[in-house]
Length: 301
Image (cartoon, rainbow, N blue to C red; front, side, top):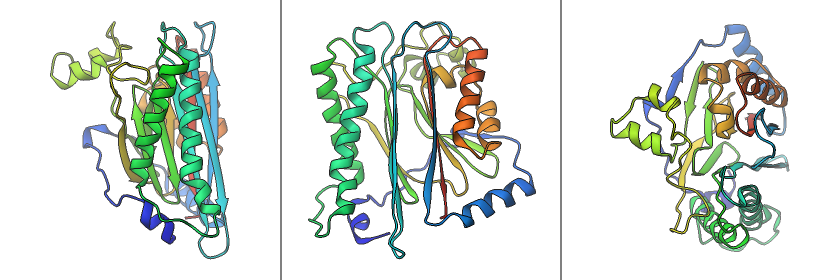
């Protein structure tokens, strides 16, 4: 990692509770060998990204926004893949929900490009006065102000992954989700839903099973656009070796089980095809909401 990244990255690693790890059928030895060969063959290292989006089967318009931006700076010494991926889900039933999600995605992505990624292209780099986590928190604060201004009465979730080499920092508000999918057969939810039913589960009022069909499962306790100050959950992780990262709105995870998510993502070498298959399954299961999916894999490291 180059000197710039050493200065701007927070070194603290955040562990994820074991109850957020789903163990599924491990990949076969042939599958693991295939993944490893693919990783070794790709130089320079790069992120492969697939996206998918659907209005669903029961909505008449889309309130989700997704955004991806990835690039590579390869000079033969400090080859660096980097990017931004995010999902924002406009709050259903709220005025300007679709505007809110678009505003949030645009403001956060522009802030991160200007504050972080354009620095990689500078010949004479100025000292950095904030960490990646601080930069993401400031980007979310900018988005909060913009949503209140441009989409009054609207609201949105935001789950954003900032990717730099093997390190990924996630900013999260609401109930869109981020997962890691490992080559050894694990799927790990790395975000915590900011929802009423999640809180009810935590205090023991209902079970996880009851939460899946609770009539208030879509009620959020935190979202961009609220009048109260909003602070995102920020965590930094190591990108899963030879694995995947998945970002999605609740139109996916509410309809497709973790086991099915794992099966589809791990069995497709093309992230775009996996996104398409996940959306098809969500729609086949009723598709009551908009669906947005991003799948990322890192190859060459």
